[in-house]
Image 1 (spheres, one colour):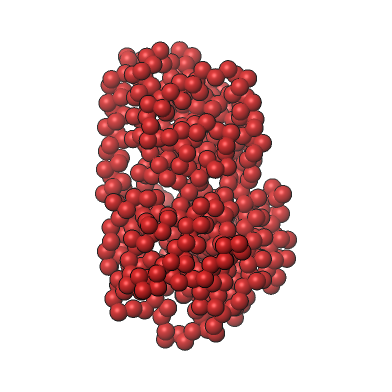
Image 2 (cartoon, helix red, strand yellow):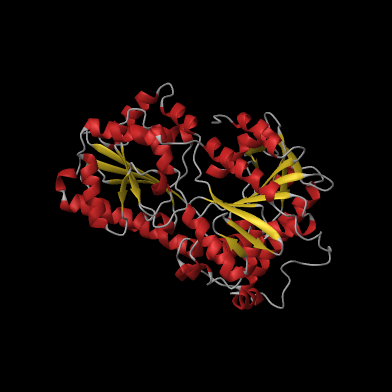
Length: 522
């Protein structure tokens, strides 16, 4: 199995001979910023598992990455065709930037993507905001991404890999002009059951966009099943359950599940780098000076992560089992996210309030039960915290995968820790050796935390050993996906000839006509 992105080069060239590799995502792998020194420009790598995983692949394969130019100095860094070679220290591939206006960001990104699709896919329809201006802008921005892709592959053969829920329409917009291209799309969040997804007025159009791919990938089989049911009922696709395909308008889309992972070696190496033992000792002296246990949680500040539920469980622990006061300290890294959205701002305030109340109730003069760190931490610091922590608690209410679970296991060099993993995180399907918890049951979670803290050392070590043996890496994931993509591309019918440029695949009589179209096809 591949252990390095360079291992994937021969495979890609075998599967897609003479095709240029193009990745398309909302987030870019590099941002240009103005430094504090006047006129000086610096390059920053935005935090995120997707960009950090795909960047080494592009460096190994070459090709192009099409993404939103979100950095304040991005426009000054590109050439006249909106391109810049990256990474700056060793240019290996081209970053093509797409520009978004203030209204684009508010309506396409914060609006339709994150106030409609995100809560819908995370089974929170109560938090969705249906606005015609959001849909119209989502459609326009998807067209802009598609146009950028078409410009870059003009006169060339290419394999184009779309990423995530921000770009559900772009594949059909590309397919309509260039049916000869091979397209794949990976959906990084859950895909909901039909009873939820049918609430989208534009469900039919979103599905048509995704079905234009040769391969549509999800984390889990249940998400792939949900998609196939929606494709059949809401878009009128012909579904072959045995072959796992959906055919619409003469084009066949292969649908599969590919559980994403992490760069295991990156965390292992960071967890045992020079000086780590001294840093672990300093962490214990700061947070557990009396020799007590330490727990860790690492999450974005998102309502899908179950932070209030986690803190309620911890409150029950210190209330019901007072022997753990001053003997168990919890560190929660909560990375701020989408603070311009009301639901996220409300969550941030709720988390602050909960932590304050718990610390006031149970804290003493020299001990604080919960330490809240509201910032993103680099891999080297996270790996040290993971290795130090006796327990890692993941309390997701709905999660496509949750890579923190795999990061924690990979970093547990000493095998002293216990992973408490929500049943509703996608990782629970793979990581069956973890201790599974139900975040909706705070009393039960408190009991599981207590049990984890009392496990004998040899039981902890054996459980962690089995979990580590079951880990597969990010390049295994890419290998599996590329293999499936190659088979799908070979089997796929190109469908109809290129569409007239004057035509628009998603043209309708109004912003919500897709809803009635979907109803008629159901």
